[in-house]
Image (cartoon, rainbow, N blue to C red; front, side):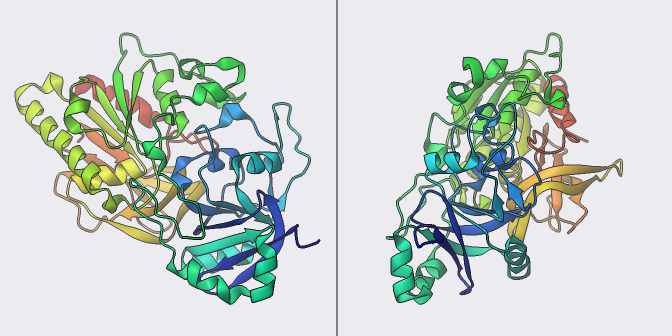
Length: 422
């Protein structure tokens, strides 16, 4: 392997991993995280929640079924870098349109393969997620000449910025604007779909029978505002499968503008970053919640049901007076067990987040509906004073388990009844 094929991963603690360059060549810096998903690498790469992060796949072989644009969760990849143990060079799948290597190059994603991903994952579990840098191509010559110490200060000083504001870049990297400011996110997904399908016609995702569209509930053509914090396309798919009309709005929409649309429901989407830094967004959600409380007293039929997923769950909790905190290494993967606190039933869920709602000081009108069985963190909340609930995991998961897909049906029931959750 000559210098053009080499790549190095440098971590903020001084650790160095040498491997083979994949995807684009150059230098990239981001928060280094890991996901335990055995499948769904394409959904991971196009999930906006991974914005600004260098993603490590713990499963040893990645890329074996190639690239299928129908399975994109957004129109492009948002990761800062990609790490795998082994990259499959010859994918085998009748739906395959391209290889993962070609996709990474087309998207400009700098990656590294051939490193000990188990050792890297253990380090991140023990020390917590940390910033890292992948360098390859012409950057290698400078790296091998001056040694890694030149790059360590850059890595240590790097900080993932407020996810709902512009991400400030280092002088060594190109500036990037947060995806939420891009009005085409989600709305132009249909351009990437096979056969020119529109979002309304993507009831079946690929050929998975489990994703077949359910029959929309009769006379329940609800209007849902999907507030885009970095929404996965499958959230919109699941709502439209059930006959909902979905209006996608940017993350910084004003409360009054949302209320003026007279929706039956508001969906707060997933997204990246520290939820507590989104002060302006939290304030607008708080206004909607207060408006809802008043409507329940005077005109209960006018109340609006609210459903939050992942970042949406956290922002709703902060708007209601709860607190959030950063997890040591986060929850990322498709095998996280959560328990329904009322029924005691356990569900396997897909998750992707680095922060959690603190469940030790919840407001009196907030009830913890789900709890994580691995670490006891809050996985869901229901509110007893307004028609609103939220979950930390992804009930729209693709790829991943469909155990909690019923929560979308619960959302429809909540839009119909307008009742505060009990």
